[in-house]
Image 1 (tube, rainbow, N blue to C red):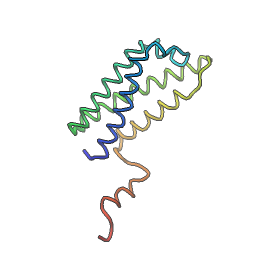
Image 2: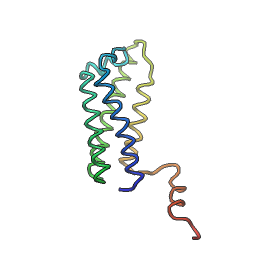
Image 3: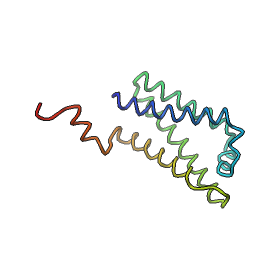
Length: 138
C-alpha cells in the first residue's frame, strides 16, 4: 500500500472519528429537523459508534497496510455515508426548515470513497504525480 493510499485512509479516519465523537459527546444537540430521519433510523449515539468503528477499521488497515481491510473499511464508509445522505435528503423532502447541504456533503464523500474503491488514487493530478515519482529524461 502506497504512502498516498495510507494518507487517504488516515484522512478518512480523522473525518469519521470526528463525526463519531461529535455524535457521542454532543448527541443531545442533534435535535434539528435535518436529523429527524437519521434519528428515526437509529439513535445518534449509535451513529457515533458506527463511525468510530469504521474509523478504527480504516486505521487498522492503514497501519497494517492491508488492502483487504481497506476495501472492507471503505465499503463500510460508503454505506454509512449513503444512508446519511438519504436520511438528509428525506428530511429535506419532508419540507421542514432544512437545506440540502447535508445530502450534498455526504453524497460527495460517498462518491469519493466509491471512486477510491473502484480505482484507487486516480486523480486529476495523476500524471503530475507520476512525473514527480519517475521524472522523464533523467
